[in-house]
Amino acid sequence: MRTIVIGGGIAGAATTLALRLDGHDVTVYEAYEDPAGDVGGHLSLAVNGLRGLEKLGCLREVQAAGHEIDRMRFFTESGRQLGDVPRLRRQADPLRSVTLMRGQLVAILRRAALDAGAHLVTGKRLVTMQETPGGVTAEFASGRRDTAELLVGADGIHSTVRGLLDPTAPRAEYAGLYGVAGTATITATEVGIWNLTLGRNGVFVYSTVDEQTAWWAAQIADPVPPPLRGVDEAQWRRVLPGLFPEAVPSAVLAATTKVLAATHMHVCDPIRTWHSDRVVLIGDAAHPVGVGQGASMSIEDALVIAAALRTAPTIPAALTAYDAERRPRINRLLKHADDARDGKKPGPVKRYVDIAMMRLFLPFYERTQGYLYDYEPTVSAARTRA
Ligand SMILES: Cc1cc2nc3c(=O)[nH]c(=O)nc-3n(C[C@H](O)[C@H](O)[C@H](O)COP(=O)(O)OP(=O)(O)OC[C@H]3O[C@@H](n4cnc5c(N)ncnc54)[C@H](O)[C@@H]3O)c2cc1C
Image 1 (cartoon, helix red, strand yellow):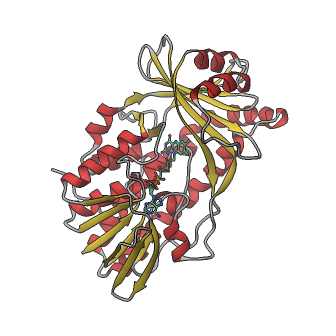
Image 2: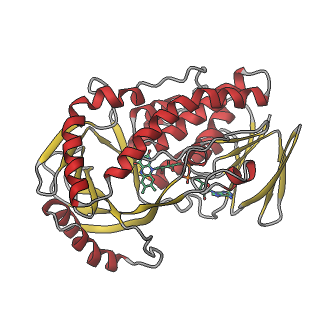
Image 3: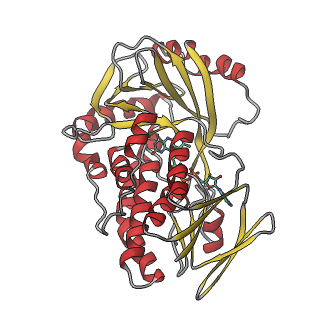
């Protein structure tokens, strides 16, 4: 079967690899020329995403490229600890979450897909498509056209494929938050800890990735999206300490070695239409979930779509099976994502409520979040890379 994948990010590269492992002929079209695209900063992979990478044969490479993070701790702005729970895993799980640079994860997945025989075409932006009963023709801004039996829309939260599949589909909107990420030199007494401070202007997180280094990320509430393009490192170094005057964030910011990325955060209403007979959405194009699970959900999608295509009698039946398998899990997660995003918007009353909620919620962390981490696709898993 010939497949076109639109978008060479995490979902697109993972799906391409999964489909190649099943012997499909796959071409990925990526809008940016840069092999890793516009994907700065770091991200965390939960154990469910790591188990998906294991099935794709990429786990060890990803672990080697990143840092294991064992636990996460939550603090008030005065530095009082609210809780200490396992990071993105169950307590008894021997696997540890991994934090790595986003570009490195994309590069590993793309390299594995290319090694498995996929084709990658960069600098090609999909602008439109036509579906017929037998296939789909994609058209790019450059004028290039390509036809395949299946088109996978892995083009992220601002997906073009989503709008072409259903012109009434919701569009991503600014979430009232923006994020800035960086690295710092600190002396860590404990390595592998993710620390979150509920600050007065947003949340500040830093992870101790080794004895001397912290990777930090700030999410700042602002009802109007501030201009981020062109804000240079020196400006961030001036602005951020004022936004995070709390003791721990300001100490980490003072030790900053590099500001890596700044981005507006977006939300999108639930997306009803994930597929037609020949076109399917995956990753953020289908379900931007955030909350430390977007990458892991993209990897799960890749396994499920490949398995559905392997077992269903026709492509339309496979896309229906994919939707049926993924929808309940994503809907459950979206409820958490909404709650978590609201928790990042500050205000004194809101902060007080958040602290009270965290106190209540953290002792039951495993009971409420455990379902995320022990997921096994009900459709049989993708073949493992040799
Ligand atoms: C600040 C921030 C922090 C995050 N932290 C985490 C985290 O710690 N853990 C986690 O799991 N998730 C995290 N996420 C979410 C995670 O990044 C996403 O869920 C994940 O990247 C989704 O992958 P994707 O491949 O669907 O989309 P993307 O990564 O957005 O990739 C889409 C790709 O499609 C390309 N593209 C777009 N339009 C076109 C077009 N028309 N034609 C061709 N190509 C196109 C883009 O250039 C891009 O390469 C975070 C997100 C943000 C914003």
